[in-house]
Amino acid sequence: MMASMNVPPPAPSKSPMRRTLFSALAAALFLSAVAVPAFALSRGARAPEIGLRDTQGNPVRLSQLRGKVVLVDFWASWCEPCKEEIPVLNRLHREYGDDGLVIVGVNIDNDEGNMRRFLRRTPIDFRVVHDGNHRVADRYSPPRMPSSFLIDQRGVVRYVHEGFRAADARVIERKVKELLGL
Image (tube, rainbow, N blue to C red; front, side, top):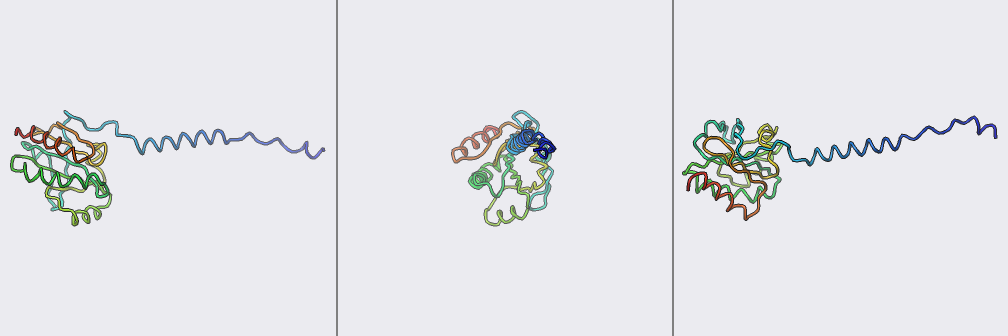
């Protein structure tokens, strides 16, 4: 009986505090992974410069495209809706390129090799740049893949389109025609 009295009482459990801390940390990590950027580029904003080279090695600068309507489309090789959107963008490029439409596809794959393999399998008629470090994507903050930013002749964003479904093709084309004055 005496021996049991010499045993110190158990230390208070830290597990409730640890559980609370762990839960808060897990929630913060989850929210940071799924949160939509707070400063997504919106209608009426001046379009940020692209400043990357296309797949042919030519610089793509919005400042050199003033006077044209520019559709900047963010896409990735792993994105199924992006794959559905590409034929629509190819058609818009063919039909309205002579009227002043320029389409720039901004690929956000981390690995440029993934983009190049995709381009060998999927013909893209418009200019494509690789933004593996997301420098351009960080400026535009595309809300999902794909996302399109339609920019007027003065370099101002006039329309932002998130995602892609087949019915979206008409909406995008109508917005392009409006800006081209057709």
